[in-house]
Amino acid sequence: MRSVVRIALQVILYAAFALSLAWFATNPPYQYGDATMASIKVSLSHAADRVEPCVQLTPEQIADLAMNMKQTEACERERLPLLLEIDIDGEAVFSLEATPTGLWSDGPSSVYERFEVAPGPHRITARLRDTARAEGWDYTDSTDVVLEPGRYFTVTFRAETGGFNFR
Image: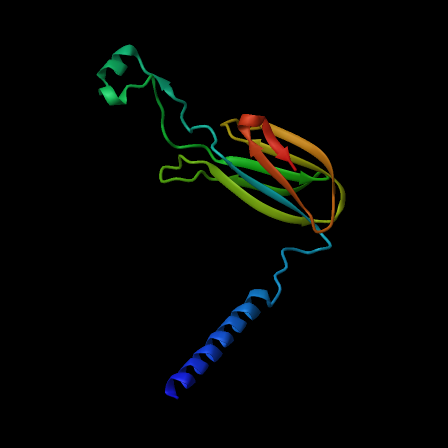
């Protein structure tokens, strides 16, 4: 008799736990964004130039290095910050100086940003500077796009493929 009551209580408790999990999994419903607006996502990770340019080693300097350390140039680790600007319809909506990651600031700078815009036709311009130049941009690209409500449009960057990619 006692084991029947124990089993019944366990079944009831397990059912209550499963139902509460099911309720919390679906309520409250999660809204990813405003369904009446379009979203633009900027996502990139890129390593800018080094703060100090690499120095070519002389044959004598290379000969002085240990066998496992032989290299033709010596480079400092620290990298420059990445400068990024996004314009929509000629109006600046995003400007950022992204610092490099890593203990010695020697890793890539990463950017992830999302903005909501009104649906319809837009001109999106992206600019990036990854060198020590004081003015101007190393990469610039623009695209005309018709954004739909509730949809995402992404701006990514790969220097290996020529720069910005709009999708």
